[in-house]
Image (tube, rainbow, N blue to C red; front, side, top):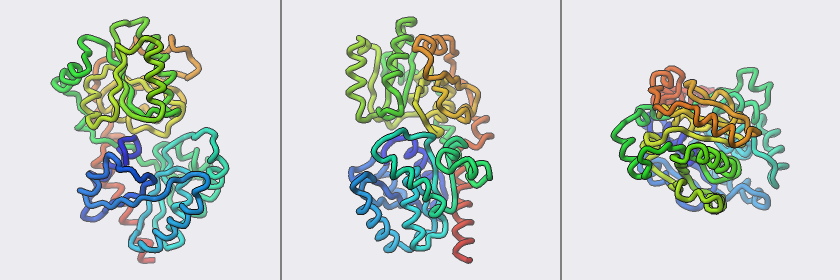
Length: 361
């Protein structure tokens, strides 16, 4: 439970849900402590650590899943957020009679790697193990569950809601953040995401280089960690961009950071419906993103899409022709169901209604 988009979305709901009626426990697949662990424990949740899901480890993983659910008959709802691997978790839950088994899709692609055969098998087995289907977007639902399920209204889109009030524009916060960034009167372009292949940092640096050549009074702010960070730091250094790029690591004050940013850049190779793009819109930021991301992301009308096959210069021109004022989007986000408090009430009702119905039956 680190500060990624999915984890942040879960915490947004967990903080707002009525915990006198619904309690979240978390099953994770890492042994190291996560950023949100202390808060989870303080809110009454438990954290269970499972083996990593990887080739050579599947038999151990399946065995421990079966043992876990056999020894925990108290659970009425299992809501799994690990995309196609949810099939394995929900199969174990089904064996012990868990009535509400939700598979939740958060991506629209995964690419090809050594796990591909297992992923194909897991997707095919999904229909036998899940009995409820959630997705962060229609595109994500179609990717994991297929067109037939998506078109038949079986898949429910649960919005990646945020705490809207937390992201509302504040001039005092903006000045404080810009002082920290040594931004002065500079154009500040921001990106928040793990340093992995999906987020496409390599191309992001190419885009910023083109921006900086056209607008030297600009800086790039990168928030996050990941195994590719050192590679990207080297590229920044090789391009002599060091004075103009800020690597901030993992931050707890994302809402505040967004006050100091002028534009949000997000050239991902693929996504589901990223929480951070909802957060950026809640902060009123103009967003320039890759067209590989579903247009469902454009909740407020302040998101521009560009194909990844366009040159960095074309991306730079789009960025520099944008407006950089923070727009008040709070009412629009509430109307469209992206306020955490409202959606947490809906989710609690769903859990309780479905689990109770099944238990009575």
